[in-house]
Length: 335
Length: 289
Image (cartoon, rainbow over all chains, first blue to last red; front, side, top):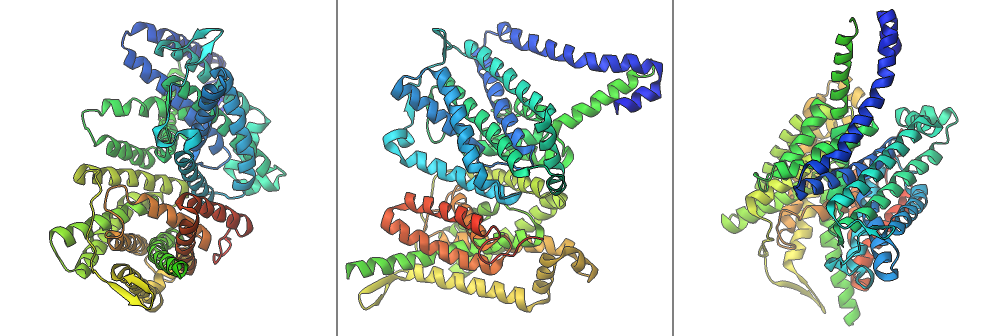
């Protein structure tokens, strides 16, 4: 598309192409500066809390999107988030493991668990994979609920310590915001780099046409396991980070409904693009707060929005943004 | 002797829940076979059926057979409307269709919470008394559930085998395009099949109302079990759903009696994973082309 525009507009096109390469960098720098400055502008702790949830939900949705890039949708994603949270919380409570190491541990263990599980479950494709991840998630909730000697069952774990960096506790919402922002930038940069690598190309080819990819000599099951392990590992680590922020954990903290919420964010934002998960989280996380007036009806409206997006913008909010951007650059073209 | 009574009781309970799983799974697998849609809202129609049964039987004091008919009809019509307006747009896209049913499920469940509140309600048994054979005694209310489920399934089976419409549905399930060429109106078959499928779920809900309780959240477990059953029996296979449903009911009842319900649930999942590994298409399913 860039080539088309460039050849059509001729000389002006090269300036346009240069601007196109330059623009994303400026936009990202501006967004980052805004994200750094934003919480200083508000004294309202609730907005900071909301921003933290948006960042965490973005990570959950992006990690699910990573699994979706190999054509698989996991309906047990919240179980990986919850398992990561339990690992780090229990390690901190029982063995006084510093939370920051707990987060790393949670990521590694969940990634490894996903390798083992993925080798079995990823033999299934399409709806079969969705069904089996759904069932696995349900069993996880059951086990956590009933393994009272370790998880304290439905009572949950209380008094989970906050993250502490070099003796500096991230115990306020604002301090955690900067940690979450750093984690978010790290994850997004990692996924972005991954998708531009040989792995990313292999992932995309599998999502586009799994049989063609297979017959072109791409080791489909290997790449699917890698994507599943990375996505689940990130989810586990982010779940651990979240539990040291919320500082309470019970079997109800992350359930099937959260798995559905992550899928909703991904679909509403645009499931074929990494930014989709971020946009979805940005749009859907504050929504229940805006719908507070309609007590009880908020979930219904949530479902209705999901249906409407599926029907009228099947490629998500990202596609709306893209077509808007295309219009802007088109009108700027002939200058 | 105590032990044999315990086993007989477990077998009866297994048959009751197995019959319910069978009704749930048959409808679920029918929709998948014909429309290639995984219906995550299937459990919500079970819940609607349970509520319809509750209101017509307890509040309006209608005969239970009439209650069942009303439950099947209202859910069936609602299902046809839902299919026509909300699921048909995603016919070519399995994944979007599935996510759409997730959204429908959220809407129906929370709608029920708004209308009827989250508190579970107890529904009285339809019949009382027990049947005593030698040392064994079985409650009539359970036996009625088994008999009713068997009758409903036989009616469904005859419809599928003996009527033109049933044959048309099976033809669409086998090959949609060829069915179209033969003059079968697929656009009518889809809503009809979906309505019938969720009517079966509603019947299961109304039948199980007195056995369990009635609340907006009762649909999740039966739907979960329907998933397990169709994976056991093969997605899209009706005989597989019958065998799988009864089998799962028995396994669940016996393992729960012996080891408790948690172990039972975990064993079920392990069984499913094992079957998927050995026979990905399910016990009676056919490999997808």
